[in-house]
Image (tube, rainbow, N blue to C red; front, side, top):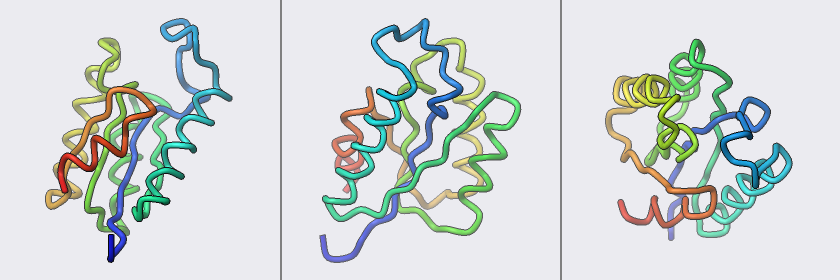
Length: 124
């Protein structure tokens, strides 16, 4: 890749996750997986940064704030937000915040913390 494409990765803050739904994870494992995913993107030539959300009440504002000063080529909304039925309204709020604040960005979805690069590459 000759010019670095920018990616905003949106997901739950590892300290805000209800791990009873994912007993194989804990904050340290999730944080490690997320950082490995970001590092992988960096090694592939992307400039990737995280926007962690902590609750439904502030999710939309957190995403809009993350998008205010930087133009992103891609915005990935993580599976932890997207696939949890209890987070449906948070997911909807995030999608609308991305649509309003970064209408030119490609929106991507991963299925777990390990296939983010593949999700982004689908839109190149």
